[in-house]
Image (cartoon, rainbow, N blue to C red):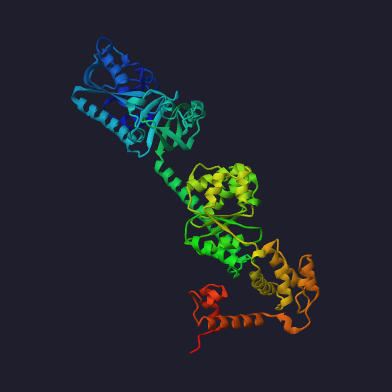
Length: 610
């Protein structure tokens, strides 16, 4: 402030003085010093009484006090000036004007005095107004909020931008601790000790301090995100206060949050795509994929009719059957023929999920939610969104975890582990088990409400021993595909080997049949399938295998099998007068679907004679 004073008034023709709030002179301009015949150092620390001869006799001191404490102004008040360092010569009379000026130094206010002889008093008043205008323009022109604090942390000035940002007016804050007004608490509302305040730290250590991610509190009680700089102010080498310049970063924080949300959504979509890609890759690599369910037995036809009936519906399905009967193939057939066929089919084997990872596996988790959760994980429910979730071995889920699954099935929503955000989900449930779930319910090992939620439409897949008619076609299919897969030359089954397969009771069902055929191909070194070495230890089977046929005509090659099939189809078509469908049609005679017969006729080129 003193430097500003010197720059503006040192050469002024008027008498100009700068006083502090105790009315002690801090600076006189050259005109006044020369009039009093004072050196520069002598002019400092003069009291106001030593500048005006009649101060003690008039109300002038009270007027100047009101300038200091209440912000009043003195405009052209008559006053007598001491002359020639208090000599006895006649004093000069003139007019005095006084203004209070806020500053950033140790005293909260300054008083600017301008004295002029009667002829020039208007010029002195104008000069004083110019100084005040310049001072206020500098502060208010700043787009950032500006506060000034003294060495005790009390507010000594505030600009208009600060008022607009935080709502605090000058009258609310001047003379009060700045920290207690708008920096008293952290964003979460917990107390912010003034001893930790970077604004006050600048006053204590004389260093510039920055705040990049803090809040100042608005008059309405809301927290305003700000970044600020607290710069210490020195005078004569001593710390006298600090200037705080701050900026409202609400919009920036909002944009940052939107970017973070967008990045998180992109990451979730990326994870979903990666998981979907992996599942699609698994679909391609599954070697037990039959391509279509093979068989024409009446037991299988009943199952296929149920699949066809329920596939287009959104109904939950419970697939029942022994191990190895092809429950997963039934689930795939239902999904493939549903309206969700273009969405993922996600399989979960409930028997293989550790109890402590059940929720993470099904619902996913966020990073850091538990030890080992180093990254976000998408759960199976979310992965199957819009598609089908196949819960294999549903009867293996522990009783205390069944309620968590039931809640998702009932409410169609869940939360990831470690996250309070609820995720809505649209998933069709197909469950499968080789257990008698009703007996499990009666024994108290399976929740009754979950059982009824899952078994809206139960489908029982028959064991292979009840599908004897299907054993031959399945065996031929497996033999051809395994030879291709293993790079083995084509092999065929003899009639005796087919009879042997039909006589076996197949406790492992289709899975066991496939394993037997694969084992036989591996053990075969020549052109004759060594089924005898691959079959389980069974008397009837062993006898049939030991009596290997020697005549070439006893072998049923694929070509012979197809030839006999064509002959059989021709016979049925002739008997039905070449009607494919309907009562007495060829398809009904053969025990197959009309569409299957039509497909095979096209495959073999069979046409009705002209």
